[in-house]
Length: 162
Image (cartoon, rainbow, N blue to C red):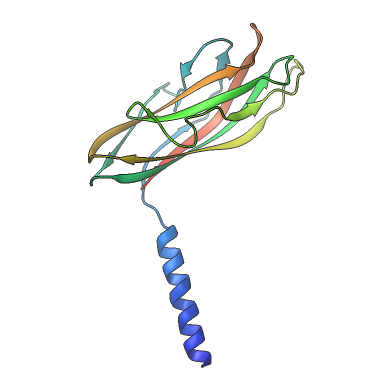
């Protein structure tokens, strides 16, 4: 009985691990800081060469991809309601859950010299309908900001996995 339970546990763990695994199909890293001005919707540079798109390839119909954008950021505003909203797009379509407002970085209401820095993960999931070459674009906007305030995106990385 003990051997049967051990074998069942081993099979269950193997199945769980095999389902968690994912193939990384594209990556980007940026080490340079980037200023996000007030009142503007802009594409986020994804590497130090300021590329704003990241291509990737899928090989079958209805391929689900998971995009994780990891970023260090801050918002400098006198309003505690100000925040940085980042949306991940694949082939021009907003991914879930980033399609709605999401406060990636927020203001503490202080315009001090440094601001409040946080590390955040912005996930996106999308089912790519057809195989081929696709593109990821990130858009950022300050929400609830006052003119003259700004946000900063520090070091960041992005991974696309299938």
